[in-house]
Image (cartoon, rainbow, N blue to C red; front, side, top):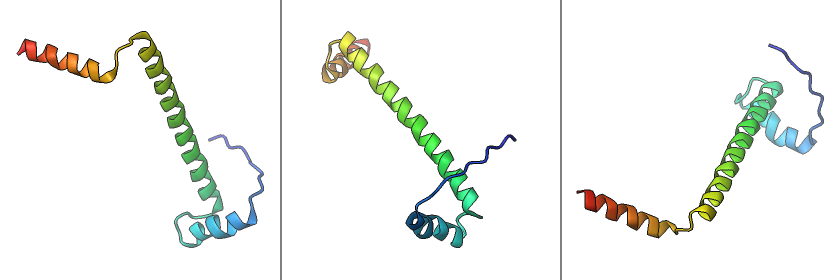
Length: 85
């Protein structure tokens, strides 16, 4: 696996009150494992945020294209279902 060495500075309060306590309580083996997990979690959250934003944009485009409100569309689809039965 290719690795990149990342030099960073972390606020002392955050390190002592959060990261160190997670390591001390054995949630993570060491600070490096904690930071890798935190980075992976942020990547996942960012992907989800982007996907949600894309879906919202799509919904807005469809709403502009098809000017029906949601309630009317649901009622109409239910009537069509009733007619088929």
